Length: 161
Picture (cartoon, rainbow, N blue to C red):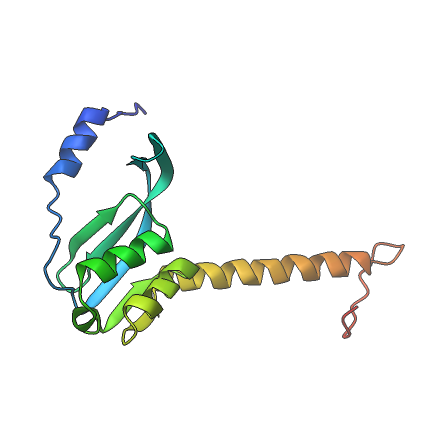
């Protein structure tokens, strides 16, 4: 099977064709997530690029449109952006704040959108449950292997060591 590679020029033209709204008011349901992308921003004071492997995309879920794509993902930057761009009264109108379980996103929701209900999307909730169950399964499997008798038969015990 032949793989087709897209040139950087083609990818840039596609991204440039995406309309990013920069709305004057925030949507009622705001969704925020990271997306893998080689990005960064120029720091004027130190004259160098601060590179990151992720962008942060903000979407209006009800209208299915991208509100903004940030090349920085720090809590300080995101918090400053929302507080400077949107007055408190507008930020209070956000009803739902959908994100993964990133601590920075949850802190952002609490500080900038205090009335919003924080909703963890299904994908990330199931992902963390699956990882937790896998850790427990591995730990129990290791414990049982340690209790294995000399003749190769498992000794099942009801107590935890």
